[in-house]
Length: 122
Image 1 (cartoon, rainbow, N blue to C red):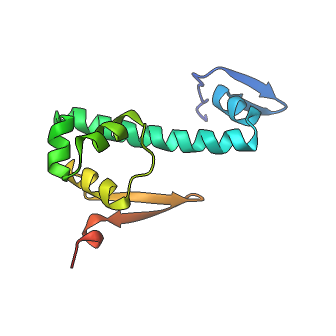
Image 2: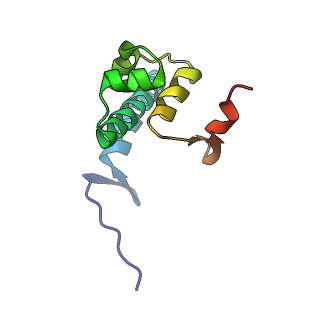
């Protein structure tokens, strides 16, 4: 017998499709609001990634900045989400100094694994 899915998010019924609160929220946004929401969400994810990695390794802002050879101001801005125009080199240095050696990029459901070894200076 198939297992019934359990939803823990408030839902409403729209014809035969059940929508989550998130889906309802997104549908109400204008195209401009949707673009802004997507940008802010990406910034939040980056900030959360850095915060989680720093907490896991018990690394301070100053220590991470020193390891990555960037300004502590950049680390703090990334943590808070107040800076949104970092260079790929800065992002790479910070992730590498936190122990990451690869990441994935995706588009339309297709993902590519990027190995940091590709970015080494020759």
